[in-house]
Length: 303
Image (cartoon, rainbow, N blue to C red; front, side):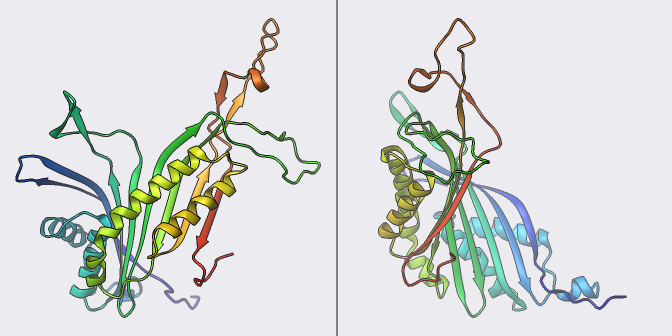
């Protein structure tokens, strides 16, 4: 038998659905719905190599811990709840060296009825999600990545793409005006927190950063006469770094959602291209995919 060594191992519980209601003194209610994933690392190799589960904290135990922590602690902002949960695992199990927590927050937006916010009724007004990744590592601290996923945007003009390299494989024509649509995936990495108390101290910054990043993304998308998706996402990243001093880097992943003109000249010479284009064919695939990481000066770049 070949000599082998276990070079990495982690395990946990995925797709833990959690809903929490907060009942306010004025009889209104607020709700939060999340999907949580937890993963643990540490002195657990024997479970793989020797079938010895003595150091394995059962994934069901991890799930039950999520529920108990959600009852005993605030779940908002999700960055704080993720940090509380991750730190709990390494504080409770001294053979665990690292705990990862991923949180996806599902939208519930308060309904307006008769022109007023309803005290306890909500609607899901889109598939946009707020996402958080927290890692507590023994002797290092807590790292947090916040983000946005599933934010679908479109503008019917105000986008360009031209001046790109051309060779014998190029068929794409240059354009000074096109539809631009994408499903935003954005993330921002906070500087490492030395301990949970630091996360608790800065907890108000997380909601504000999410609001600022979302506003910057939407307003830059709408206002910029974009010469390329690449340039637009870089401008977004710059602004987030300027707005949130505790963030070290920003990441964007923007797939192009293409809308192609349809040539209808075959039907009685009907014009529907160029300046006459009004009817388009939305495309599902293939699609362009553009990504970047923009790092604050003084942090290590990835490019």
